Length: 122
Image (cartoon, one colour):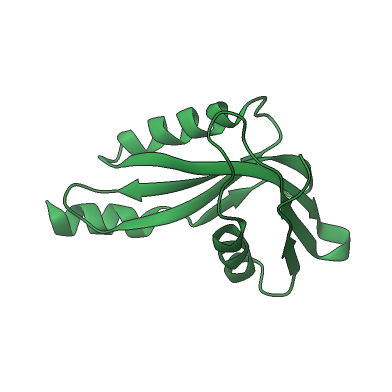
């Protein structure tokens, strides 16, 4: 089961965020059965609460036999016309995500972007 879960894990995109705007995001740790884990970023404007992002992602992952926990949240300001993403803020329910981890994930996904983060701001 470990190898299969690892394969499912590798198919989970590291980053899924909206194409532009300011929206909430969560940093999630995804696990397969007995497999290693990986951290993923999900951020969408439709989410009124960080929990909305977490719950929808958890449901999707469960269909592939994967589970996840929320490591925290914040906000993303995605400005595609400037090729910039700024990571900041926190989640009232889940606490502050490690924005440094989120920033690394975003840099890998958007290599020609300037990705910055700050602990202040909501």
